[in-house]
Image (cartoon, rainbow, N blue to C red; front, side, top):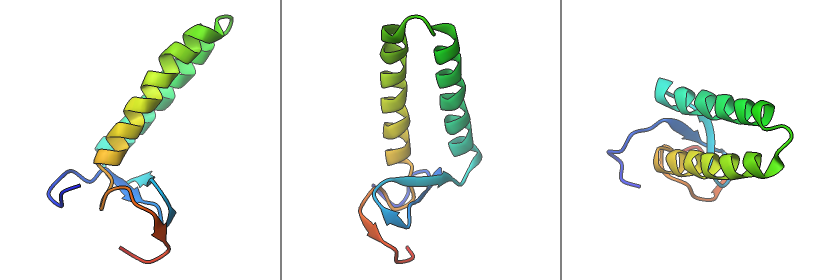
Length: 82
């Protein structure tokens, strides 16, 4: 990731991936995903394939957005401060 991109999520201190949101945009993406997941599960409770068909792309979208907007990008971290 380039250094001039948006920073919506903090990197995890240990491991791979994103940590908590650090901007309102990151929080908006996170809250939107939670709302979509809850609405999907409650609306399609009797149809697990519909839940799967909606949540897989929603989760993939969340992962792509968080990967592109994490400060320093996604990489394995061993606890050093970035």
